[in-house]
Image (cartoon, rainbow, N blue to C red; front, side):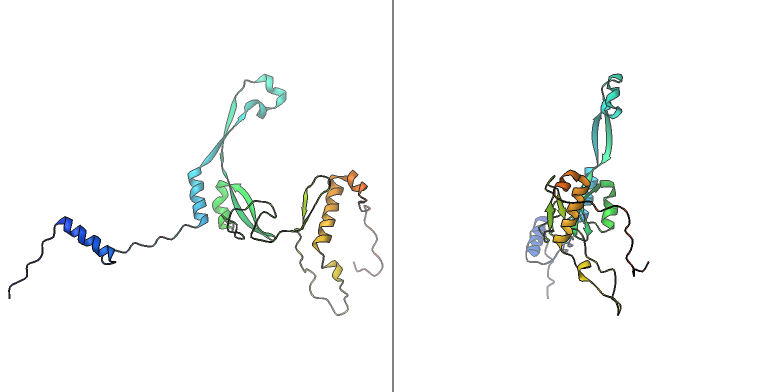
Amino acid sequence: MAKRRRRQWTPEQRKVASDRAKARGLGGKPKPEVAAATPEQVMIAEQKARGSVRTQEDLRELIGKEEQDLVDTGTVTHQRPGRVAVWKKTPQGWQRREIPGTALNQALANGFKARCPDCGGECGDGVNDCPGREDTAFRRCPVCARPIFDLDIQQDTVGEAEDAEIRDESFSQTTPTVRTKVKLEQHMLAYHPAEAAAYGIVRPTPGKQPEPAGVAP
């Protein structure tokens, strides 16, 4: 039996055969799967590429207006790290915070996120700016229009009642309506005392009142 001659392949024929085999899923080494970068990894890479920020200030403004006539005009250049927005976990949900770029790695290691986990995006820094959580109740100051949010978290720190102890739920179970009203009155007494008096809001009498009989020290 005659020995079969081995086929001689030209470089062009080898390339064509290799392309056909790859098209059919045969031959060749499979490409390794590359994991997608996390938002935190993307943020770190962007911060490294961004680098520091250069700012300039007028020299006379830094020295002071009273000495402007004593110096020549000029500018002072500052080299500062840029600021980045991250999200921090709070009792009211994830809140936006701006931090120096040099603190980014440490902040992410401490649990900060590159995006808001509540909505998955980059929402604003307002209390009710995140579309991924329920809005927080608030009142608005009638004088300066500042919003007064109900950010108090009710916690049971007293523990279980004793056998002879009387519990009044009115002291432990308040509502957003009551809490925001108290905070608004405190705000007006501190920042708008004249208007507070016009609204009938009176500051509590200073000084410690004597404890009634039967109250344990």
